[in-house]
Length: 262
Image (spheres, rainbow, N blue to C red):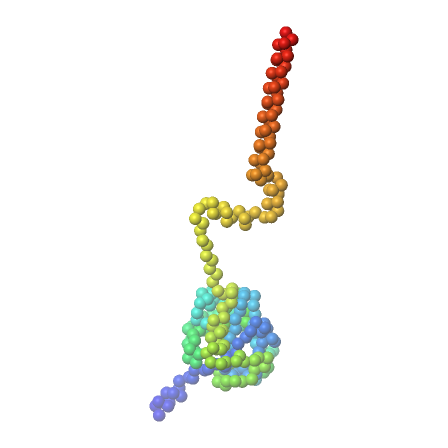
């Protein structure tokens, strides 16, 4: 009896029915519509760039409890992103009023059902209005995120505007794919540079890239090639030599004629 009483007092660990957003779910009206916001759903999403947005909707009845949490995976690169750049959720109530679910803290959370770890960033509870709630997720940096809603464990609920991914063993695990789905902006960029072995190699690598075709064309017009320059030099030198020889012959002939005359 004591063990039973203790078990009753221990709060249950809620399991969430996973929903995966795509790049087509850019706004609440384009994203999935959860028919019952009290059912425990985990909405997995990914912002590929700083201006990306995703969204979904959920219906609730008057007086029901709206329970929300915002999380990110407890892994790099999300754990390295500053708190102010992480995703936040804009919630619009049925009456048009709105509030933000923004990162406030970082608490490690272990999900025993999926054997994954997250950092819980924010939580919110309130008595719901009757109608449809809009949820818009945005951030200032690429990041994966999770928005959990509801507390009632009920798997396989039909969700409007959504097709559940096909799961066939570990080879097609949607959650594993989501964990490995870092966008190109999220991945660190590394470059490898091979230094040249000599100064001549440096010149050979830089000059072709720095010289445009137009510059090469202008240089070819204004500066003769090495072969042409040598040919011109030979012609000019020969002409000068011929001129000197002709002048010498004429000069000698004139002196000879002058001597004979005298």
